[in-house]
Image: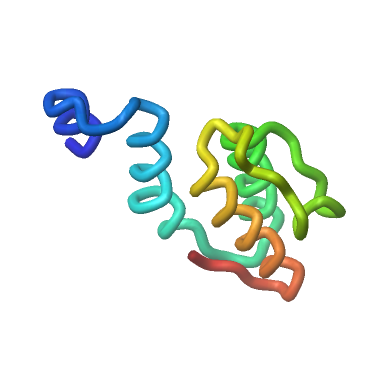
Length: 88
């Protein structure tokens, strides 16, 4: 519904609205400590901001990212996963 109302009201560009939707509705559901969570986070980072290696996590310029807000949150979640568990 978020994207439908955005489209109807022409509030934001689609990519910006989808970024907000992903950040608010999808990412909060990701939590855990196993390899499936790690794989999912890495795949979502590829979708949001191309491929960013774990070595580059700290000083990444996300201005080029397709979904910069979600990419930033995913990088934060990946950094926390190193401690054994991550959540939104």
